[in-house]
Figure: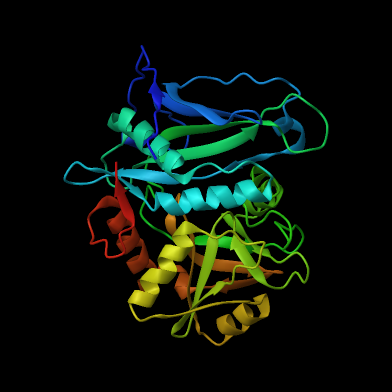
Length: 355
């Protein structure tokens, strides 16, 4: 597909921020990508313009019915000066699965990849080079038709913005404490839990805030029917090493099909580590904690790659995992995955794509 993307360069470039002050998702690059959709013309007018506010009618459907989806991926700078993306094809495929679930028209995968690569190329000098840093890429789609009828929008915008981000672990990779949520529910099978819909994240904010008041970094979500089976940890997929086996909840319609999740499963399989994707109950974790076989636990996602879990709190019972230290396998996964992403480690799977 020969994609023509118009580029309108910014006349005023923003100052770069030192890596120590970047944080996450607060410092944005000079440009953004935008493309329109209408029922008459389909997706059209792909263009890169200076980063700027967007104007929407107050009756735009995104405000009233939450018809919006997003993705998140990263570009890294390698030691030899290349700019690389990590598995962008999988992110685009998932974006279109989210589109389908929220009745949003699909986007051509080649066009979406071309837009990401071109935008990264235009703002390439924004990719930080310090260890642990990256250029975070946020594609998203919003329903823009100005109408209050409850029906799929006839108009949309596909937008990509990018943010230079600092190290996720400023003080090194350290385990976090997690509160097992038994009151609130993130999603149920048949809903939109398997899509990257904005409403999924809004629904989790109250539980996260309440857990933070008790000194916990995030919540471990249980299923919405039985309140017994493990689903996700915060906005990440979750893994447990029990004995010699690594367990992760099977995709069931309410769990997001994480790109990092899939990468971890494939890495573990290549190392000869037994992996089971299945239903995991909180009771099983309790038994494993009590008999000492719950050796490691970690979350996986684009922002952190791999985030170790050192403690779980369930109904007042506190379970320490690995004596609160990062497990050997967890650390190996983090180093390997981030090594592949930054070109420091071999990429036997062909996951990285050069811009």
